[in-house]
Length: 442
Image (cartoon, rainbow, N blue to C red; front, top):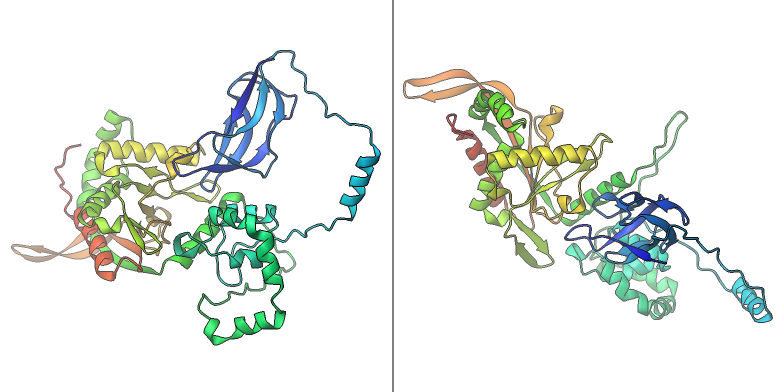
């Protein structure tokens, strides 16, 4: 009987594992080639895994909720038309088995303790770390005791896995410490070197209130935003740019452009082009922080925040954006935005960003204070374009005219980006927008 292993596929350059959300096929079900077998999730995106062969699903190797490494077999498919799934064998009980069962029955069962995403000490734990901790019976107190090697001292998957072999030994050591001594150390001023404990506010539920469970993507976004604010001291600089030349130029060329290219010309690719030019002028805005090290990125990969019909947010990435002309940027922006709304992005298309652009103007907002998309160190929000009366300087004197203005809001990580760099960068982006050539060919 020919058998084919269904493998957990590579889900992007930075994704090494995925969680099985739901099996769509049971053992014994017939499966067509390319038919979806299960749904999986990473910290970046949810995906469907299709069958690589036609046949019968004879074995599911993992359960829902299991975390599986990329490249591992997750199911076995038989291509034999007459394949039969064998029922599990049940052997008659014997004396030895009865004895074992009694031993198991009286063995102490470890209590499953929920792991919160933020501990009382202010530490943040990712969904993957919390899943491993719960599976291995690691308590919140033990998790807090692990020294994190991630950015900002975050506990990573590797930290938890390295802790597991010594779990029993370390737990025993913790339990030998008298409780009064622990309380005394926590209360002592000298020990107050970490972030202050954050107590969650009590939330009351009143008559008529509706309780809505967060979906998985909203939970990930919430965790990511809290982690970003906990990691980076945010500072935001604002610049108002006169984009009259861009508005008039786009109005002049957009119909012919759409007729020729079959694409709508929006403002987003224009903003991205100005961004990439400014990043080349100020390359230290295109960095990440790893502990006490600064990683200066070679590639300029621009993430563009896109709102989904569900109300959630996703950030597809335009790789090597500085190497694309305006036509290429337009095609990439439209393609990624359309597939983001349809839920058709691959994990690789939402990873690897080095700088992010978000358009709060699409909601009618004039400016915002965006949160940095970690592990990046800066993000730019563009506001709504509004007509305003303005003073226009001419060789013949000053005049009052109607111009198109917009605000640029630049949030940056003050650990590594000072006000000088953060302010000059957003000013340079505005300069490129204001100096737009109204006679430019496209």
